[in-house]
Length: 337
Picture 1 (spheres, rainbow, N blue to C red):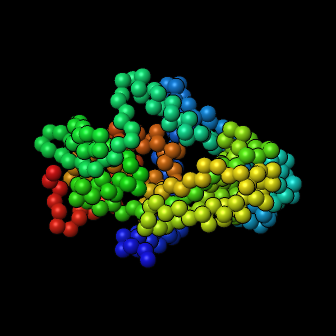
Picture 2: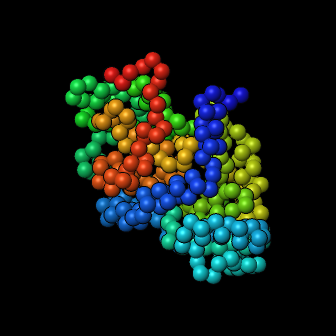
Picture 3: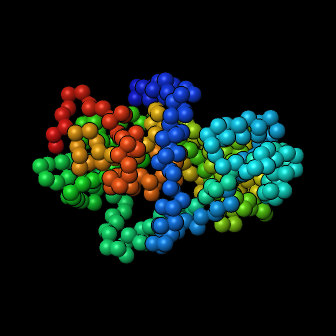
């Protein structure tokens, strides 16, 4: 049975699932991500490098009609679709030789990058340590408190005091905020992925538009990812979800050894009812800031979120993502530490 909190979230999601809300949210995200490539280039210059592939994304479909429908949606959003439009017949496989005959149509979206998240985070940590930052790994934050002049973060590795705290714990930000007496309207949208070796690896990221899955080149193999599962149990792993991804991806990537799957993984995406991140001060707590709720765009929006948190972004843009729209005071609790 779904929890009351999950039912509340799904009701809020349903109310916002309209064309008007979609256009408004897409425009806000586009404004936030407007200089994303430049921000990532700045990070590369500092030594933070995720090995970005910059060949765009290929969207592959089983029919011309499906591809045309998908293309129309992207053009409505103003996406940089390649001028040739829908690729027919054997054209998708000619564009991406690793693909099999199931990819009967598709289109290219240009000026899109794909990075290796593990490499990006590792090089970021290395740069921070060189700059004198102390990174505490393997510790869980149990509570955040605030007094007259400082903020205190209590963790399983000790207690840390600072002038300000940023809560950026994905969906677990809900539990951290609960220690402050506030409730975040956010749910876990669980995604699954795994890696498979392949005779031929795609040279760019491939979206399987109708199958709702992604094939991402990663070293000598392919990372297969997809699904959106809402479940009250964050840790429950459903093997059936992996099998569904195998069934979806196999016709498109016949050169992969689908029985030699490795690194099967499940992770909870922090989903908000309106599809927008929660970035900025917790209401009533100006020195405790949120940076969560990025749905499926966490890495993409990370540099731009940093500018929001540090107050470097346009105030009007920052207001669009203010947590006050989805953060509620828990009944019977105040905001004093």
